[in-house]
Length: 79
Image (cartoon, rainbow, N blue to C red; front, side, top):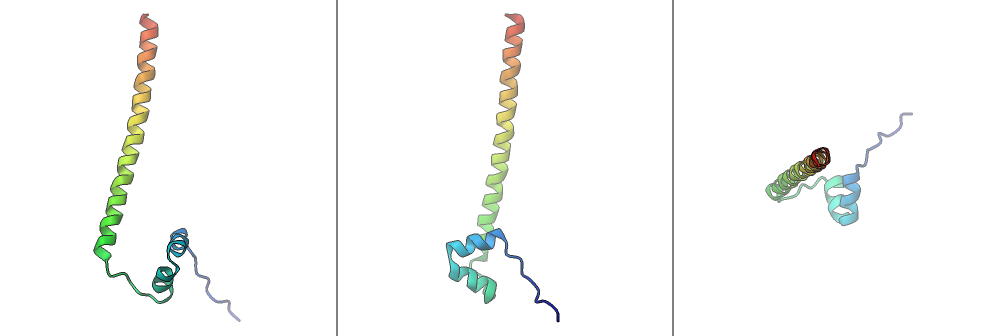
């Protein structure tokens, strides 16, 4: 006797279920797709752009710290 195929539940599904169990049920169980696909795609693109900006800001912070350390080192050598 074969075992039924197990379905992997992703963290995003748990988040969706916690936010709105009915929306999760409609999408995951009933297969209903949202009608606002373009809005969802724009939101996804905005989140990706925001993530890129955060990564750039993090790199800029480390560059600034490195330049500050370098400036202090040069100051101490010449002081």
